[in-house]
Length: 405
Image (cartoon, rainbow, N blue to C red; front, side, top):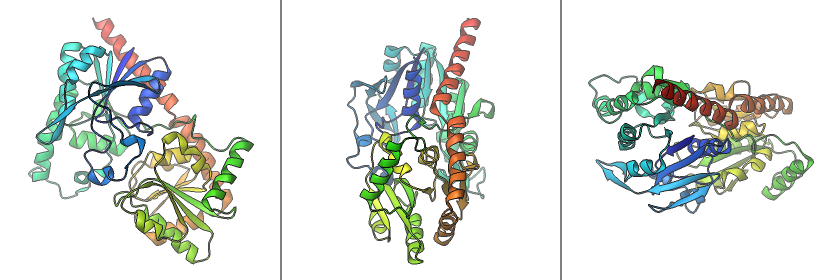
């Protein structure tokens, strides 16, 4: 079986769903071809773009270039903007060259889905899509006063809902990462509810797992020493963008508050962004730059608690897989991510976050939550299991089409 994965950018060294699914499909013998443009990661978001700097995920390929990566082939095509939206150049030609049996697209709106449908009509592959936009990241979904005649609603109908419904006619299934992603896909992107399936984002459980060996325990001891943490310190880790939307500064200020009260709490922040200077001013906080996804497990194992103060992140699943209890805000709709392995705090409330961290100073409670999380990540969120199920679903659709033919 040959599968083409389509997304605007190729983020090497990141644990994003598109690259991780490609890796695990390839691991199980699927011939995977990843098609991206020469656009960088977060090309549509200037705030997020600014934080990556020289990180390897920021490196783009040139149109016409191909490379082998993680067991699959990456192809770069060019792009141009039409009405302010990126258009893949020669996407149909690239798909004609690859001749996929299945196309898994990670773009739900814009020109790319329409281009892919045009290719499907001539090439006959089976088309699948994905929905990863949460309510917290989609302002229109949070508006209680939205009316059918509202300009924002009418604009959404024109650019997302109507084109999305057209594309859905030719699509087998849309995989939503969470229940609220499914809600956004149905309400705002024109996806029929019967074609939307909730499938969680996965975890690379081969790399992200609790300490198992004496060598890993020694690595934890050495790493904490290098970072200036003592054996008594309760280390809270955050990984990702240091932006207002992610707002890790809430954690930095909670750590400073607890230290002012005489408690041995520290903060470890891995990433970059506009809040870097403010975080540097928070007592007890250490910052490290972005690093490849595979290098993060020792840092999670060197910490006691994982904290993501505002928007959801795939990193919270990685931390849970490493045996950390996690703290998230109380507006999180994907509560399956903290079922038995995490606790909520009041969104952007520094005092409440400090209180929740203080509760997790109890090592027995941390162990209870952490072990539950590590087990659940293997059972429910492993990319290994997700890829196996995805292959079975692809093959079922292809088999049905062959029988019909």
